[in-house]
Length: 145
Length: 90
Image (cartoon, rainbow over all chains, first blue to last red; front, side, top):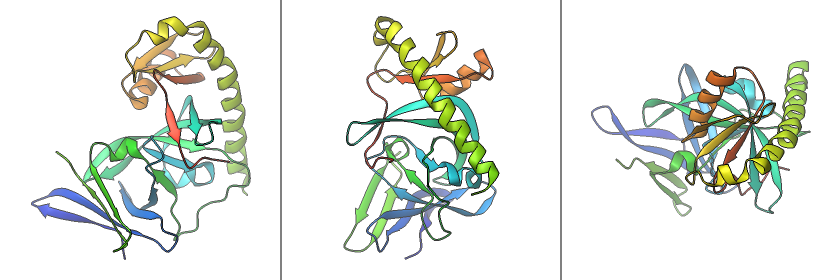
């Protein structure tokens, strides 16, 4: 199933539609301003930020690195440090400035074209509604006004 | 791996370590002052001086930090807990 977007009426975008892939990951195609291809991302409700990318994919997103470094807590209670960047995405049809965290890990590699490039976290999902339907392999993010 | 990526990776790694070393010391020193702030406040600390700016979001804090301090290394502290990354990065 192809990820996409749905217009409910007029030009108001109410739903972002994605799919559950063969590895059972919820995936959406995130449109980017001035980029026809968009960005394939994994929806990760265990990540409380907005977007996370690896350094190998940093040039792909055309974002701007800041001089701030951000501590993160991992599931096993270890901590890590990520770099903070800022960029823009298209979110429910509108351009939105987002906080992007950049992970630096040795041996990480650039994501292949058909693989997700980033994690999309609850910092973007909140306050909207997320439905991941594994039975129908469908992902829907609905805008809550 | 190309040279640009290698340079970026090295820069992020070294600045990350430096920011953590300096930043955690400032957070410790500023402890009572910072913990009195509302939960969720984002504090961006100048690693060289310990001065800081506040924001409601990381983006807002980053903008305020650059406006006040220009290009200098900073450490983010979020009152009440910061970013959780359940899946982890190894």
